[in-house]
Image 1 (cartoon, helix red, strand yellow):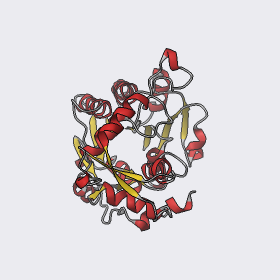
Image 2: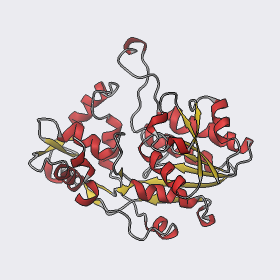
Image 3: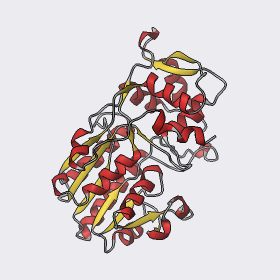
Image 4: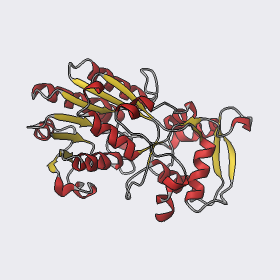
Length: 319
């Protein structure tokens, strides 16, 4: 089977491509010029150079393929500003990448009579949520109403060795644990009793990739949305495990009321050097838990990789 993939040069996309190749499937990958080497096994892929806003490149990527995987996503957007054009990125937005790009790919799949379509969404998406959540929600709705044979995956926090690419645990290590300041345990209000108590369900990237690739041949997954998550853990447990795995077990943690941080973030999150956005804080405090057992049973993943010190050794290896 030939599979076109959009979003193949990032952390999760690279694992999906490797899983496709291991299962004797042929990836056709849309890659921005100069990013080919970000794909570990790019020599075993059909590479199409272009961008997600280029209709011709999208059609060339899908031509002669039998299924589509849309894995493009960002956790933070940067809108261009005439007065700050030197300091910010050019229009890297949720609307463009989560919704408009997905819409173009769905429409092209219908044009080329490609029926199978797999979407990477996210746990907790909702119509009236943050920009991240609402654009993911609208993308889901567009696909569901397309008439295609769709499957949607909604993972919680994805972790794993990223080989230098952006990944949640490495980003936390860099932005919070490697600084010469105490690490924050965020909480609502001004009383610190529940600091760091919000929960997540970390899921390993290898299990995510296996679900994506297995769904291509699993007819029971058509027309279904699957949560992907592991054991529920509090933010405090997660960040302390990351600290120990990063050889920073002596790191000090302090309660941090989120309101003043939100105010500062609303002023500075347009700049890439500021470590967190206001919307990221909002979603963080909402929690991000889900049960992946339905997906694991269907796709025969008997022992999902747990979030623990054994699965976080890559944090110690990378300085």
